[in-house]
Length: 226
Length: 249
Image 1 (tube, rainbow over the protein chains, first blue to last red):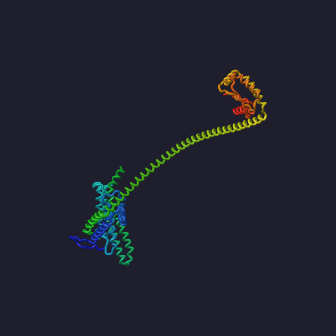
Image 2: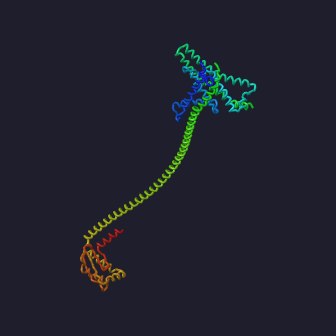
Image 3: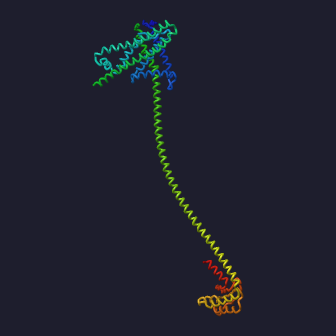
């Protein structure tokens, strides 16, 4: 719960969340390098696990968006992997999940918000993308804007609230019940970590794919009504 | 629940860097390996499909060849059967002809053997008959029979035609001619004189010398030899004549 500044760089306070994130980045980078430095056509046990994970991410994205634009697999996959590792960090004694910091979840939500517009504009053009805010009627413009902001806010708060409350509950149970009692809570923590990561990544994917396909959906709807 | 600006900005930067790191160290290498494997699997499958198609084509080709071979085999077998039937027919015809020829040859041989046997039996019967007749006539014969036959010879010589008489006269007139008169018994002198006179009448004044001989093999009668001409009036000659006549049919 303590998100104190660990040290300062050029006057900017580097919080524990940022340091933990850097640690996770190093860990993921090292694991990726070790896992992919000797890839073979006939995979071993670990290569099979690695390929299964990456291919599962790719298949999940292609199930929503059959032809994903370049970079989308890396973005959504990194959401899943990073949030899983970040959520699971909380079960290590002495560490806390970076995702219980609203600053990090807000940053991730902002990235999702920007990605929706980035991929939507790349797929449909600026006019085509902005036109969806005026569909089916220009009166709907405020509602579309509120929807965009609220779902971005909900992304940030949902992940932050779930992880923070989970860790707080685990802490309370640990204080009240002793050492062995929180074990089921820790199991619940693992499940919750996986579920929240999946929800965040899948919602990001749905929002981005909605931004990509909205122009096509509008065009199809118009063609159908004419 | 505070929103720290520095953390917010740094986390955005951190996440974008992490996206770049994972994309470079994880997603791209793994996806490349997966793509290479998919390509290899696709190539293997394509090769397998091509081999399968090739195998199917070869199978169809082999089945076609087998069908053609079956037809050729049936045709060849039918042709061979026809040739064998024709050859068998020819051999059977030749064999039947050979058997028929052999049968005819055997029949000819059998007939010839039968004829020879019959002839031998006949000759034996004739010889036995002649022998029996000679034995019988030998017992019946005697000087009286010789005399009687001599008288008949004298009568026959006297009754010769002019043509035969001229031929006989020419034979008697030949140089070194000799008349040999052979009889089964010695002829009486009177009978000899009558024979000389009769022969003299045939040969004229040039009657050659005469010589009388006895040969009991004649059984009865006499035989007169004058050069190349011979008058056979004996029982033995007559029996031989009859035997030869019977044998000649």
